[in-house]
Image (cartoon, rainbow, N blue to C red; front, side, top):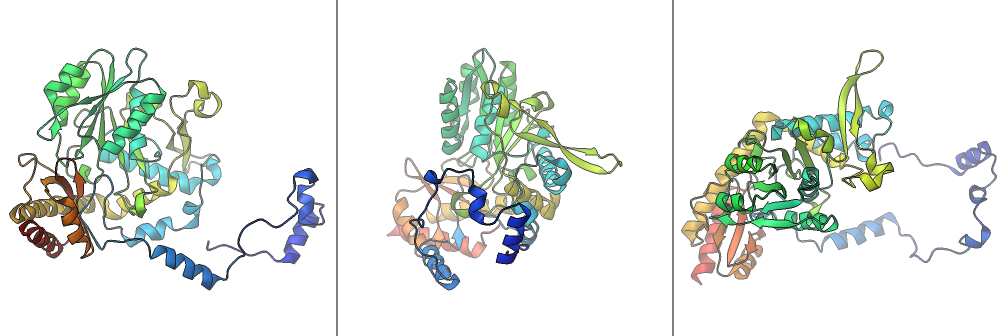
Length: 439
């Protein structure tokens, strides 16, 4: 920490004397002597800084860091502008926790407010909360927002990320809710099957855009059918894709959720990540966690406060609809800094780069012998190909520092391209595919 200040023995003694004490042991005078530790802790001796550095470097060397990544499936490698680290590296963001005292937490409250505003603009909805733990938790929490006394069954498209589905099922199990899957047709949600499943006990439908297989769902007809049945529509969306696609709000979604990791958050071997949630105004009071709002102070100056916070989560827990009592403030600050640095046009350019490079990669792989599984479906930056021997191919790619696609059931592979992938490296992937399939 930049303001870390060591304390001398003399300063320690002066603080003790100010408290009317003589030694640090006096601080524990109310703790019975029988439960105090009277011997050294059973832990290894401390090491010098150089020894610690060598040990950490030795452990870190066991990690495999791929210079070139062609895998997504929920976590994506994007360029993170240096300013994101510079801004969020400030210790007022790094060490901040829940901003209960608004008068001394204005910086953190403002960063959360900016994040909420960005999410509303990306999703086309009216209100966003201060973030939750990750995208899967956001989807599960959204399902609970839609639950009514006579409506507890949840519909989830089979095109939703299996990890997200797993968390939804975990939440539902604890609340005696039933989760049913909506079948697919050619890689996207089957609207006819959905209509048959929309019974009076259905509370919501969860759809993913783009879906887990990379295909773009035709959201508007699906949300219309859901609303006609009296249920609500939840769209789990990729925030980068929202720069070029119609927003969930424009497509009729009641709630939009997603994983915020693409917004300036490194892959970090799986976390910490960021779940965002936005809803139409009529559902605002059902959003879990907290909402930061803008106001003015007694002198008329711009200020920020916790506008909405469901206290049931703390003091009337038996009536709570959510156990979310905190938020990923540092990750949300990174997302806000990333979006501020990129701006609308910069984010659009990132999205267009993803689209163009993914389509280039798909064509290159098809010419090399891996045919697309859903050739007629539009896609954003992920797609599925046939892949008879995924282990052999991935091993060959790994030998050149390339992380290939994600193997799927049925001899298939899910590929991803972002703005980080170069044409030369995509051509090299295609060449390795050609070599492997020919051997």
